[in-house]
Length: 341
Ligand code: HPA
Ligand code: ZN
Image (cartoon, rainbow, N blue to C red; front, side, top):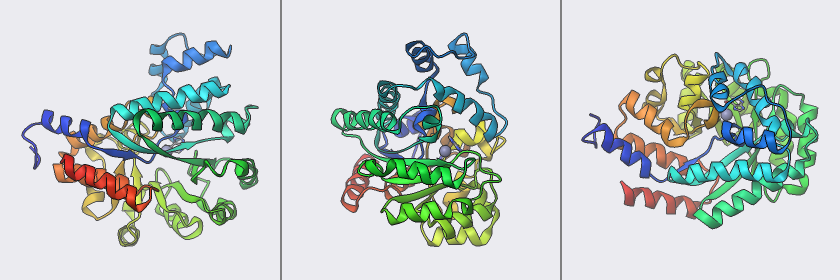
């Protein structure tokens, strides 16, 4: 048994109560099949599934694009402000149950505006639920608007224009969707404008794309964090740079398994990342589609890689130090981890 625990059960209980932040979560990817059916009925939208079991059975993916096709289809049931509220409130309740104290969540406005849903409808529903979660659970949040990289930079620019009235509620911008063939360099100008507006910068890089895309995210987009980053491990100079810069990687173990970024969870590079001095964190990405919220992700890697108490504490600490919270809030959360361990 790994250092610090007498049994796997003791480690599971430790994970369950460990104070943590979640930094890589697509709110549309938390749409559970039950809510999908409810919203399909509410909005009179046809979905190509007869039951919740049928939906879950369809969640077998061999790569990122396989998943994205179903993900964009699934979000089609989201129409009204209350739908976005219900989606976000359900996620916050799940996160709270996992001892998550702070969340930094993505939303994909282009997945909605392209269907005729107003930007205002999306952001109003999400932020109302985030406000309620803070009042109800004391859970704080940041909101990150992602650009869909399979679309054009002009489309991203237009989305940033639409966001301007809401910059008081948007903390950062990110880059997601189909990675290979859509390098960060495609979005250099729109990210420069976002940076000029004072927004934090993140980008998915090195999930399926090569280490060169991680270099571009650093050099051209000037990211504050890398989302995923797995393939950085193929480039020794890049590993050293990420470690030297204390760059946070938002790693998503069950996502990596479901999208075949790794063949088995026992092959997951999380422990290698920690041992290389990288500031890795554990996150759920799209928990409804990938089979587990944040604690299930910690649990899966803890068991497969036999993580010690020190490893788990490092991961939880990294989730706060890598967050966009202010220094006083970070210190408060780190003290809570010290009191818990
Ligand atoms: N990668 C890229 N785009 C995404 C993902 C992901 O894991 N989830 C939702 N959009
Ligand atoms: Zn993601």
